Amino acid sequence: MLTGKQKRFLRSKAHHLNPIFQVGKTGVNENMIDQISDVLEKRELIKISILQNCFEDKDEVAKDIADGAEAHIVQIIGNTIVLYKESDENKQIKLP
Picture 1 (cartoon, rainbow, N blue to C red):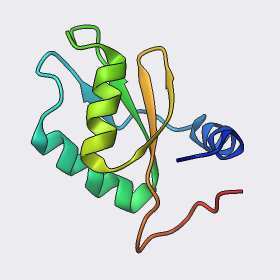
Picture 2 (picture 1 turned 180 degrees about the vertical axis):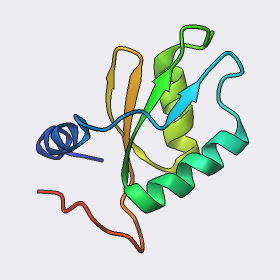
Picture 3 (picture 1 turned 30 degrees about the vertical axis):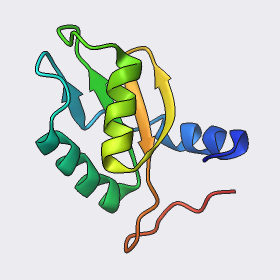
Picture 4 (picture 1 turned 90 degrees about the vertical axis):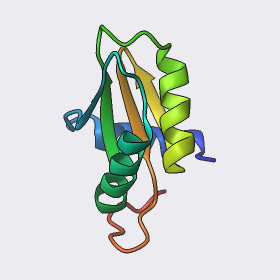
């Protein structure tokens, strides 16, 4: 789990990022989770946007993606999810 201090640090890092993935009416699927895992390995910190036509609850979507990709939910703000996963090979972010 991430501490409050680490989450604050990651939120400040994620502020300028643009969402890379969008979750629409099809919801979360295995292919999307695989792609998100790959991108998290390269970038460690990403934003995901939930579109208006997504029928699932945003908290459920965030939990499904985080569990599938073995990532941490840093923040859910509006319809945007910020995820963090420490990279094995491309470590760029040093947590406080």
